[in-house]
View 1 (cartoon, rainbow, N blue to C red):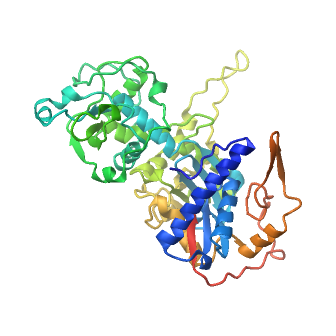
View 2 (view 1 turned 90 degrees about the vertical axis):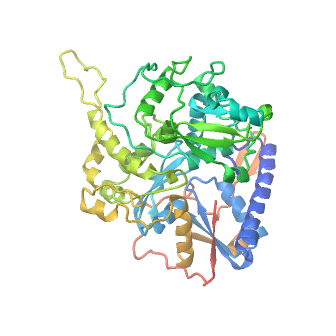
View 3 (view 1 turned 60 degrees about the vertical axis):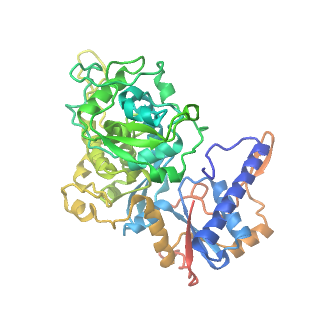
Length: 520
């Protein structure tokens, strides 16, 4: 269960109730961190808050209020997760891609200074991968219900018991386990292989499970947030997997609304070498009549190609993870592009999929080269005139193609330049999901955290509220804004460049006290 959501109520009464629930959840979680996990007294520990650049300000205010007023911590330092991840890689300049659950965010950093105006995001992340995997399993997966008796398990063949996957089986826990333990990212297909095939293929004869009444693609892609995740961690630990010798992909012919998907399934099946997997799942409540657990058959091509949704771009609002990296590079100054392109760091939970980072490097090169070969669809402006040249989106980045390098690439390509050979795969072998935590530990040990807010300053601001504090007036009431002492880049003017030597601020000496990293 998540601590908060991005959908905040607009009415003051409902928002106040949500804030109270958020206080209770965060207070319980932070107390568990200090008292159950760290076994330490929060009054003697400084805290570094690892924050996302787009973390809502009211959540930061709630975290600070609980840490100061409830847990009595001496100070809080706010540090960007992208910057800490870059520090964990041993660099202070680079381009950091954080592919998390809700969104993928790219932030350029130069000399430990995040360039927030050049930040770019896309909703293609772990949540979209989960919903896409659920839709593929509903369309092409196979479910074997538990046999009604022990004799039926021995006498009735599995092909006679197979059905389409019930929607109740694919709980959030099952989808998460299938994504983390079964899926991987395959290599990009060649342009000659990516073609529309006939949905009907008479050369392959496969036993097909009986299908339910036809449903639309939107219904299959629907993600239900009300499904109870009753698949406990004990079941997840005891889930067994077995390799199937043949594919169970439904390819007898297109059902209504499935012709395009069937063609893609046929193409991916022909070019996939991954095996199908058997996954033990709990049967739906309406079918609790058998013995034991049911079996979910995950086709091999789904395991390999479910992550293709993250690399399919072309949409203005939903750029692929490769396009959002290139778009961020186009926004930075020209003299920084080469340095940032050769120092890319990929972090987050979604890059934990095997093959994700090497595929991202290949997609970056493909996106840059394919933009020049795209034919122009614009007609000539006047009769007899030549057709206008096609729009080359990434023409400015094409000279930098030999310099592209990902620091934490486990399988770096042969270097095409000196900077690429010096950077590709040179980062310490930390998992992408733990890079921010490692960077937070380094910042705490070296006393180089972000902007520090001591408790004395917080208490003084509590006693003397700021008269110029902004007030948001709503039609149904008045709500106060979060505290102004909390650092936030969205409401402070950004400097045009580095401060001069004469006006540089003196260094702040931090007391030699242990610091604890708490992520938000």
